[in-house]
Image 1: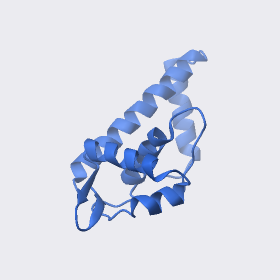
Image 2: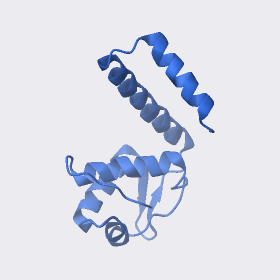
Image 3: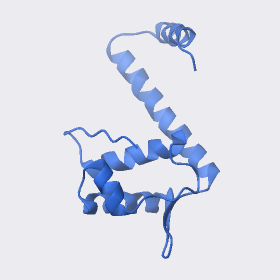
Length: 123
């Protein structure tokens, strides 16, 4: 997993966001065993306490669960993952529309922009 952090927000919050992305994108598959806190912290270049805090938050969200003897795992609840994916997508669309409104784009122009961009992009 490749980690990207910026300086304007708490690292643990960014870890939570990136782990969510890893889960909804399938980079972390449902039911997958996570590396240890120390291994994850080392790969991200962060303090183990910071990683532990992020993982605890993901557990509270129900995206990760612990098994005392086997470690931590990604939820295998595909409905929860699908709901999260839709929520993240809706949030990104709302932000996009807000930014387009700020720069003065009209609804028809936004729709045309999206259609043109989709035509040029292979999904």
